[in-house]
Length: 547
Image (cartoon, rainbow, N blue to C red):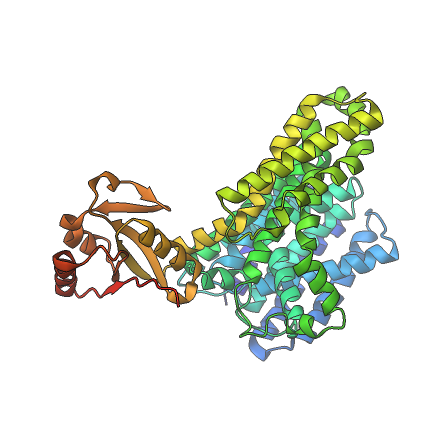
């Protein structure tokens, strides 16, 4: 019944404030938003009671979307060409079902929808009108009240009635600015950033189900939130991570709306790259019981894709092309302003192909594409440095030869090299960083105290983080060398020596103790096992041998 509560609270609150205040009469095209939401609410109630098929819900949303687009185009709005009309109808149905799919964890859909409705009301207030802004604000307020009861562990659920109602509100409200004329591309980017979580989750699920040879309408625990939970995050943490992505998208939307698309284009591109990397990393979390990418492997173009993706690393090359272009453009925007920027941008456009070719060649020759992202470390950093420096030198020489360096700035190439170095480090190190974060936040794993912070102990930490099936999480070191006390080794603190063992075992609620070195033996090992046996803590030992 949560969905009915959200809808009633939104409509009643909006009507009360509207009737008691001096609001102008809303345009009919603005009334389409609450009317379509009410219709989808009824469809959702029927689904909650009668269990409609996915096809029935899809057809219903497209029918409602068709009338929404028609109403928006016949009341002062921009009449859409027929291809745009089809896209708008599909957009309406897609956003409605994106919210429906997102309702898979306590507090997730409600929190994301609350942020999105508030952002749409704020960012597009002049286009939406006072009455519709009031309605969107009422929806956000109703969701705030709903979240009190829907936070984990939930006592109230929105059901399909709530998710379809909210999806319709967001879909119809987002179509209004797009059909009002103006800067279409900028508006589309802003709306996409506001709705980034439902759109990202839906695209992620549909693509991976297709690659796994599964039906798109099939239910399952393969959403972004579920994969975060599979990595070891609690449900609360998974929801908060998606909240953070949603708020980051909202901040991006605000900056693009205030500053314009062109100045914010590099930041928007990097935000998109970050989302893609998160999606690629989460796609590697097993969710289909060894059926992942079964359809892709059996397809007629599988050998072609394998050659490109796995042998030639086409994905990495395409990513670096984006990074090179974004960093080169950002360098111009940092170095020049206003009229000077407009004077120098033609030189950027003319030289971009040369810079792309030189830097891709340098990165390839540096050996960057033969290195694993999962184990990216200090040694790989030098390969990045070589590739970036060599690429910048090649670019400068090529530009000097072709253009005699007329119209170019040395500072641009220095800024560009710095940005590109940081961007490549960030992307290449992202998988290892995400893996380390997931390992440290893994709640269901056994808490392990490692005795010995030397090479064996460090090896144990790396293996526990890399091998999720071990189900072990290092929480602290114990070491008999006082100089190591209070230091952090691989992010794990050294809490004390043998004298502190009893206290640390109880304070940190340790499940297992692992002896990491063969030097820990004799009387010291007997004493350690005696203390652990007294507290009921099993003791393991690392055995390393080459067979």
